[in-house]
Length: 143
Image: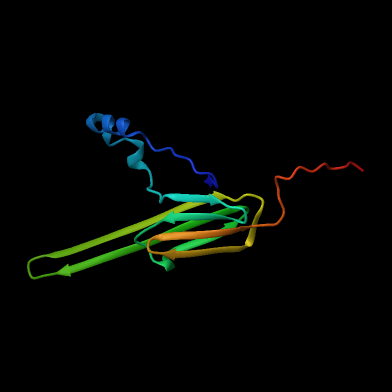
């Protein structure tokens, strides 16, 4: 799960190259066992949050975007299959691609006004902020 703050936890190129040439450890490296997730840019503006998800190779209908309990979940799944039969051989190829990203939404999000658009491999999600400022300092009187 991610928050609406970008972080970078990619291993350095040098450490990856050192591990590549160390045959004993190459196939047990963590980056080989991880699910590949699309890159996400998050922009915090005065009136909204804008998420850009780089997800080429999908169609609009492949995506599922939902909110529940203060979480925004973006998932997509696609599969493709090619069959070719000739006199001397049969070729069958298939691929499945999927991902799920979850973000914790800030308290000042208007859950009813979230819009999404997918165009040329880029999924853009616009999340409107509410008018109330949750960072405003307020003294609470005790009765």
